[in-house]
Amino acid sequence: MDFDAVADELYALRPEEFTAARASAVAAARTAGDRELAERIGTLRKPSLAAWASNLLVRSRPGDVEPLLRLGEGLRHAHHALDRTQLRELSRQQHALIRALSAQARQLAVEAGHPIGEGVQREVENTLHAVLADPGAAQAWASGRLAKPLSAAVGFPAVAESAVTDSAGTQRRPSAATAPSRPGRKAGEEQRRRLAQARRDAEAADRELRALKDEAAAAGQAVEEAKQQVSRLQRRVDELTEELARTREEHQQARFAERSARERARTADRRVREADRKAATAAAQLERQTSSDDG
Image 1 (spheres, rainbow, N blue to C red):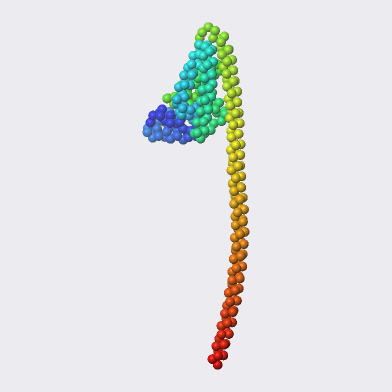
Image 2 (image 1 turned 180 degrees about the vertical axis):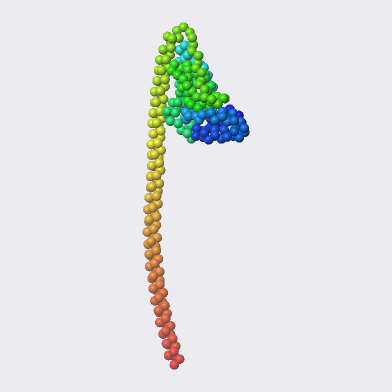
């Protein structure tokens, strides 16, 4: 039994499946006589919903991992070099890529049967921002074994805190990016902070707007589906009403036919009885006539 294989398997599961699967893996390692491996597996932490969605994105969209990592390298280089032109262009790419990846993560969670809300999606987006800001966070995210979401510190180049399971089975903190040491850094730091804060504020407003648009679209879709359901049910009611009317008419006709048949049966029975009486009378007269002729 290999630790990395077990860890990869566990972090590919849905959060509610993690604990039982971990216990099973620990028991299997103990049965195999590998107590050290059992202890390492036991230290693996159950991922939060945001960490699970981030891991799901990495595992389900491996082709999207490298572009984000390359963008992070470019942003960090432009930031350290104070290349405003490149920084503006890469920031625009950052916004579009994080927005796309965040939407993918949300869709993947839905497809996996575990929809995430706006708060969890924001944690996924914060994780992606941390990936761009810090190479340690990028490595942690790319492993697909996050136990908690990552968060980028104010000022872009560092990651404040994260939790990721390394090959030793322990929780570790990604290293902070090394700040440049050059003349004028202090003078530009405040401007960079303001730019970063403005970017975050704009992104937050954009996320809120998108969330409201999504909610409005979902509500509109729900209204349309409800209208269609009402129309379908109304058509069914009309069909059943028409069918009920036909059935009642057929029932009335059947009852009329029944009454007519009974009347005909009574008439026929009465005629039979009259014919029987006539036949009996004629037979008696014939017998009397025959007896008179013989005498």
